[in-house]
Image 1 (tube, rainbow, N blue to C red):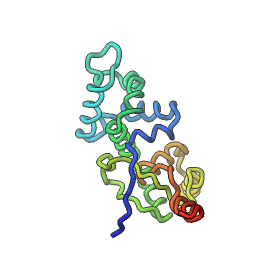
Image 2: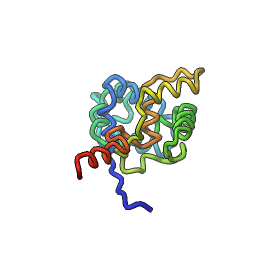
Image 3: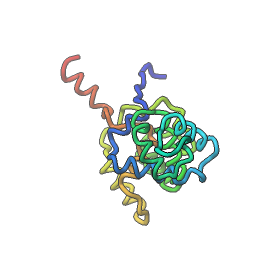
Image 4: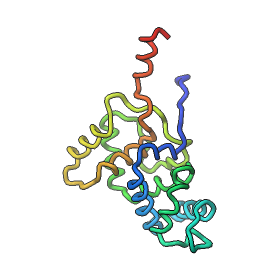
Length: 185
């Protein structure tokens, strides 16, 4: 076993990689499909919504229509790692075929990925290291070549890569060590 420590950033760090439009799209899509989700996940999202989201005209924000709730939830999504974990877990469950395809692609590329069924929302957040030689453009091209019949948007493939791998591209593997050895440290 390695003595190496793994660093994590809380789930809401993903907001640095999402446009405002895409963030709202994910919230609308996920909140609009809450009834399709497992009861415990739905309850967790509703609980956070009641506690942290204010929808004008609703005493219980969880009862608001999905589009209104999504708009009001943006700020909470930007600051609450628990909500982000729940929303992304729910979004992943709403796209089982995409999840399976991205999982298979990552495995074939040698990524160390938990099984699709694993509850990633229980993790402390995203790891900061990203495999060398990989970026979203390469991964989206590889996905499109592997699944030409799929109409998955590049943002959706990228988000699924981040969620399933549990990684954000802050540090490229091997790059930090190379820089340290070149500087004589």
